[in-house]
Length: 458
Image (cartoon, rainbow, N blue to C red; front, side):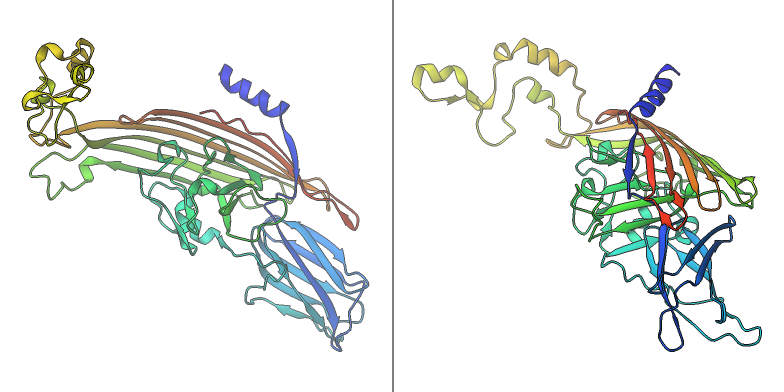
């Protein structure tokens, strides 16, 4: 408890403000009349049906409009001007980090005439030349995931693979396997959570792996980074978490694996099934605190795993322990012959006399187990238990201060404890409180300001 409170205090004292790192999207466009002329002063209203959030703008002298810092999800956009028929487009899918272009032509108003488009193809993003993919909520929620690591879904994008276990840095990836993008190392990725950097710069790992139930969508940007990002050679992976809506929604889950459900190894010749106990459990709940104004979203996920690991090693057999190397090729050099002849002579029959074996080496050999097979190499098989416990919590609050001002606060924690019997143990804790607010005053919009701090401990 004392350590937890100390980390919270450090987060408050060392928080930093960053501009431009955002988990929202943008819509821009030009409004014209039927002759191709621009329409200044038109009213552009964007509505987020899930939360009732409304953004209103006016087109400038060139007929242009720009709607920044919009939460991801489905939007309805209505454009109107005196003397023209209102134009409405529903179900515009706004994804994380995307700038959509919506060019509209208003017709002359007739008798009670209104143009409404209820379904349309995805809008073109023409603002940047980036190469990127967005893994949407449908994929996150419906595709089965072994281990519930959202980064496994990154393989839905081109040139993305998850490296096999045992590679460089694998033992330090407590948040799960990290992807290789475009042939680059997994440690060269940048990871963002709601626009906040969650990359461990010491080990180049992901600090917090959010629960799948708390993820709205995430974006993999492979090239052409914006100016505010940099420092790594590989991909930029930005995760947008879910927020509450006017409708309450939630989920509970439990995934259980046990060796009693496993089939025996065909080549095991009657050997018992390796022990396995794995529980992955948790839930999420989101909804409103105040209608159309304040929303919350909570998530928790836990993992308790004990599984058997089998490794083979090369250790000295009884003959080698006694100094007999006659079964090996080559010769064993006697170092005491060098001062006499200037040449290192071999031990007779490659056998080291018992009295020449160092007592320290003899005592050390007593601590090494005996081989489990008659082979010279890879002659010892060991079966041990790997233990892994993970707890992660996410809390998010969204609040609309007024019709033009909004902010959200998020707190995330990731606590991982792992014992690796053939390597090392690891204890990783990360706390990430954050506060973001896209502030607006009249026609002017300030950049989204993010106040965040992180306190990872390994």
